[in-house]
Amino acid sequence: MAEITVTEYLLLHQKKSPHATGLFTGLLYDLILSGKIISRRINKAGLLDILGGTGEINVQGENVQKLDELANHILTWRMERCGALCAMSSEENAELIRIRPEFPSGDYILIFDPLDGSSNIDVNINVGTIFSILRRPHGNCGEVTLEEVLQPGVNQVAAGYMLYGPSTMLVFSTGQGVHGFTLDPGVGEFLLSHPDMRIPQQGNIYSVNEGNRKNWDEATRQVVDWFHACQAKDGKNYSSRYVGALVADFHRTLINGGIYMYPADAAKPQGKLRLMCEAAPLAFLAEQAGGRASDGTGRILERAPAHLHMRTPLFIGSADDVAAVEKIYAEHKNHS
Ligand code: AHM
Ligand code: MG
Image 1 (cartoon, rainbow, N blue to C red):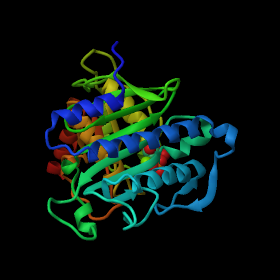
Image 2 (image 1 turned 135 degrees about the vertical axis):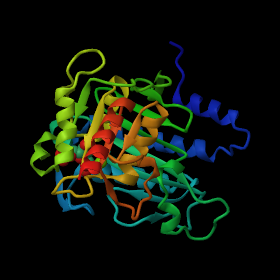
Image 3 (image 1 turned 120 degrees about the horizontal axis):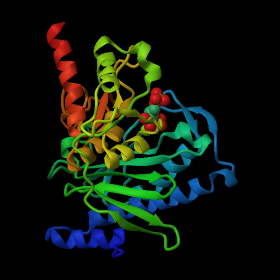
């Protein structure tokens, strides 16, 4: 296989768009560098005694893990200085982070979950960084407003994730398909390993936290029962897989097909996952790979965020599997 590095890929891509200034390429380069630094720290986590919680509670009311803090710091420090951004929003920070006047700025907006799946850190299981890149409405200047940042996912100019698993992988899309790169730790470069990733039309894996069943409504129970009872196109039963780290469960779904679900329930009436830093970027990748992402009634990418940390139910993966879920919810609504 020809070894194309992600830097070569980005430069090639930049040359193809005549108006490119290099700012966007620089933004992605700094983001990828941050991911490599996080990956190195995660590999050494057990040795450096940075596993475990800090004892603090973050803006979402969850325990802050030490590595969450570290990943958040690595990203905010470097990206604030990248010169392409006017604002950032992190899952770990309640407020919008505007680029301070002492740093150069641009009109891109970066939204990220610095360490998704962080409850898995202590048990040495996959975690990842999810990112979404938006652009400030054309021609706007001065201090960026919250309204300019609260855009539906359909406006994303790029989205992706870094998965810190057995290998560290970078998967992203700039709206021209989804491409996967694997970090070669020897040379410290991401090499193109999964060009033009496509989600199978239908899979044979469903992924959901069934421990929440007692809190589901009747329609959601029917959705999951459908996957218990139904045969996939290959004639096999659906199998269940649930890592508990969205980024890892999504990565498997992207490659093998099937569906990942985090429905709303009585304890989490809006769902658990955050629209802007988790659901929308993965929905962008899913659609770019030929799959779908829905909140059960419609496209995730069309949901307008009411605030930075808005949550949403999520059903994402193979197009036929997501369509099956929407059909059950629609039928249920019609009969009630
Ligand atoms: P996090 O961003 O704080 O790690 O929370 C999001 C995570 C997802 O990665 C994962 O899919 C989900 O929460 C698991 O939740 P649960 O333990 O309720 O199944
Ligand atoms: Mg997360």
